[in-house]
Length: 112
Image (cartoon, rainbow, N blue to C red):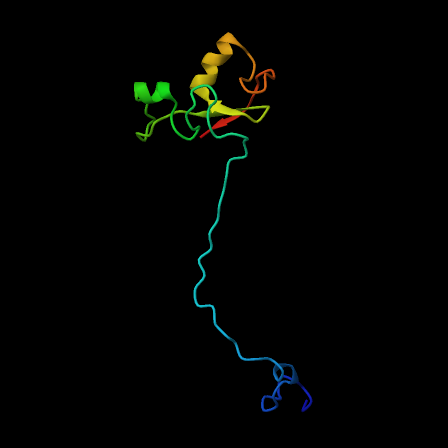
């Protein structure tokens, strides 16, 4: 048991002999993250307003959800282009194609 490394406290470790002293010690670290939409463009091509904001029609009519926020849902197509649902629902009545790529319009998902 005398050769056990855990019991030999008085003996300095050979690995620490060649190490220089620490130049600094990290006391605090603030991590920063960044995200982005998984779409090609974050502006509705129909009304030219950012998809995270309400469309012009919802802003003019002052549509609100239950919590008092402006309620304007974003819709993504199978082509991965995003538009305001209000804008796209009117567009589809005239032409059932994506305004940007002219593919047949089908909804991939909806949400805010």
